[in-house]
Length: 126
Image (cartoon, rainbow, N blue to C red):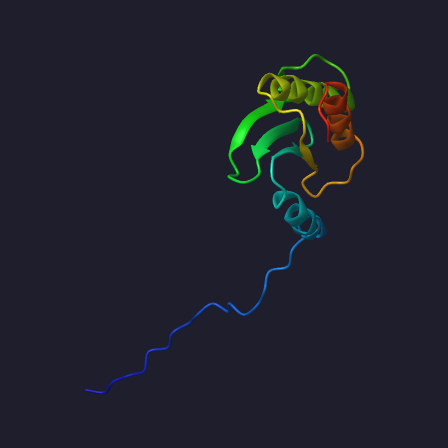
């Protein structure tokens, strides 16, 4: 009997995946924000909705989340401002007055800025 050599095909794992510009910016900023002690306000947005979470920085535990799905009609920026006000209301009820703003790699403009403005108007110190 003749033995034949088996050929094994493997994936080329030496080709690195490239990160998007936003992912690179997020890594750069989140390293500075996550290392601080206390609480952080993380803002995420989609094409339709704006979401804000208050996270305990040391443990990474999400304390609460506010989303604009239940808010009244208006523009996206107005809804984002109401999300900021809702976060401030819940945070003050839990005894949190000082918080670090984490824009999640996004520009501080439009809905992201509106969340920060609403949180400041609600009584939080960013």
